[in-house]
Image (cartoon, rainbow, N blue to C red):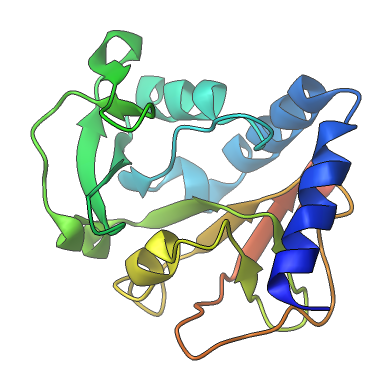
Length: 186
């Protein structure tokens, strides 16, 4: 199956989810229980939208526990700049209709300094760590800048671990997937 068809199937399945908030709570609590999450001083995360596993509570909890959380700001070329989250009042609607931090932009290379990187995905291949995104390549570019020993975690709903996701040369793997049922290390 090609990536476009796989994307269509997963998006359709997500539209039928019965309790996406419960999924988000389980993912958040599982992550926050991990020592490597608790010790991460700088965390790159994302502000979820639509049918993605919700991250708003996770971002807030990380921030309240003392982590510096950086969130992406989509650039015109689809690359990701980064800005610091400083509480719920630090978010505003951006030019593309996405919520973004209002803090000073720190540059695309800022993700290099993160101790933990949490990314969105539609699916992850549990054998290879290849993630299926929305198709813009933004997170593949960002993941290419992350050091080899930094945990990279994709957040998924149940049923989104998929064997045999087609990989292209620009695709970047993640090292873990967090689902409501737990964390899968790849």
